[in-house]
Image 1 (cartoon, rainbow, N blue to C red):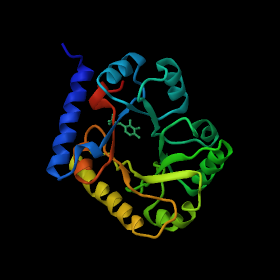
Image 2 (cartoon, rainbow, N blue to C red):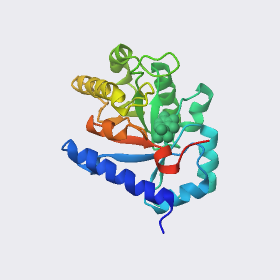
Image 3 (cartoon, protein in one colour):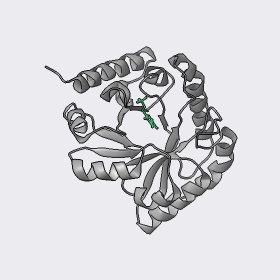
Image 4 (cartoon, protein in one colour):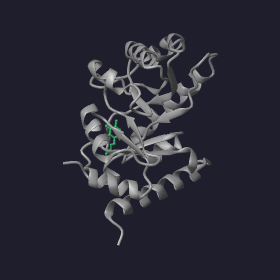
Length: 232
Ligand SMILES: *Cc1c(COP(=O)(O)O)cnc(C)c1O
């Protein structure tokens, strides 16, 4: 008998496939990132056995503990998807394949400096506060437009796209205008002449609204509770 996590993963993959097909997209362009905050290593083990290869963590310490305990595995990559505290930047650089949540020009400069120090290039996304919520981090839409030229000078970052967490609403359709706004912003920014930045990725959509996000162009979806069950 399949475990519930394996079963959930199959259901999520079916939903991703259907949402992609409905909007004429290739399901292969959508990366499923398991949002693993509070998830145990036994649960990670089950997800890995069911072919999940991208884990996304919110807190550095929890991520470091799991990386050490779970160990390196074939094809496994870790993403950082949470809010970044200034003093944690140093430990983040080079340890995550993609940082989804760069929220300011200052943070981007600091990550770039640390990446240069380690002689690496760090892949990142720029988080946009699409709902203009006071409690959430991220660039404002105009803030991002104004920062782009300066961000394009940061030669140790690979800025691959945008990320957003729309305001919470029970109805997944309520997220659609925010996803559409992020996509429109990505398209508008991508038309500008830039040296380095290639804005291709859109990290948007969680357990309750990822099907909508995919219809609106998501290339990375971050899914926790639909895979592992409700967090206590
Ligand atoms: C927890 C979390 C998710 C996943 O949330 P679910 O609703 O459990 O799918 C996605 N993105 C971020 C940034 C998160 O913190």
